[in-house]
Image 1 (cartoon, rainbow, N blue to C red):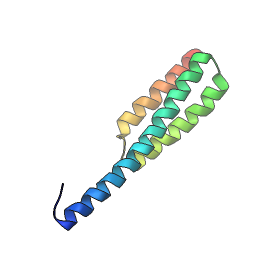
Image 2: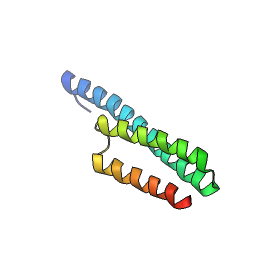
Image 3: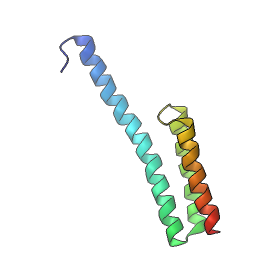
Image 4: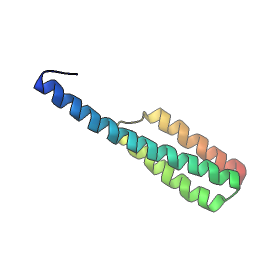
Length: 87
């Protein structure tokens, strides 16, 4: 544990930021899981809507620096490819 007041403040800030980043990342992951689950069920209309939501969440994570651009692109590509394969 830090003893210096500025180090204590930095630790508090880091905890808040980490929690916020994890929340954004988890929302994106949950949307991707939901899309894959809908694809398995064969519910293409709902899967397409969920894919849009997942792509928006991934783009938001990239714009705030939580995910790298190529990582989000790869995830979007794989989801889209899976959706197109089931059509």
